[in-house]
Every structure is written in structure tokens, then in C-alpha cells.
Amino acid sequence: MNDTGPTISAPPTPVADQRAAQLAQARAQARAKARMAGKKPDIKPADVLAQLPLTQRPTVERRLADMPPKCRPAYLRAMGGKSRLAAIRAKCNECMGWEGLPYSVRDCTAPACPLYPYRPGAG
Image 1 (cartoon, rainbow, N blue to C red):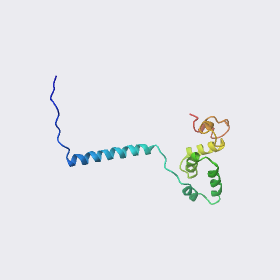
Image 2: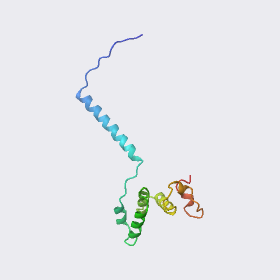
Image 3: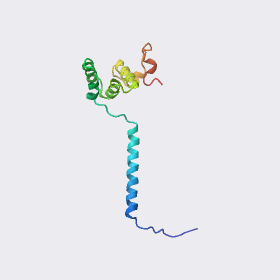
Image 4: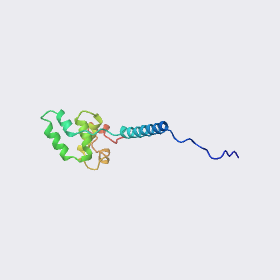
């Protein structure tokens, strides 16, 4: 066997400590950025409502009040003109009565609907 004995290392220097701290911070920032990459930014209802014509606002406010909270982000993205997929998802959710999501949309029984081929979960 090749036993060289215990390894003696020099005590860390302030520069090495600083570099290690910088690397740890960079790794933490990269992890946080990766986690946020899959998340969509929160859209505030007031921001979307401010962009809409005055005649459309009361209807949108009523729909927001009637829908479950988990459906509101897609609806707000759709109303803000941010995503066509969000518009399809919001319309399908509304048509299915906001119940049994997402399975109810996937199991839609309205093949004559123009959005039927594009519905979420259709594969």
C-alpha cells in the first residue's frame, strides 16, 4: 500500500474564504433563478383592468369574483393579451363551470366547439 500519512493543509486565507463565499452565493443565485424560470410572474388584477376599455371592466370584475382563485392567473394573462394559451385555458375552464379542473377540460364533451382541438390536456 501507498500510505503517505495524514495530509496537512494550510489554514484558509482571507482571499480563499472570500472566493468560497462568492461561489456559494453564485450557486444560490443560480438555483433561485432556475426555480423562478418555470414560474409565471404574478399579474395584478388592477393592472389588467386599467388596460381594458371602460365598458369591459365591470364584466371582467364580475367574472373574477365568480371564479376560483386558482383560475384567476390564467384569466388575467388572457385578458391582458399576454398568452393565447391562457385565453384558451380560461375559456375552457369557464365553459366547464370552473369545476373538476383540469380533468373536466380534458374530458370535454363539446367536439363542435372551435377550441376543442386546442383545449388544455388534449395531448
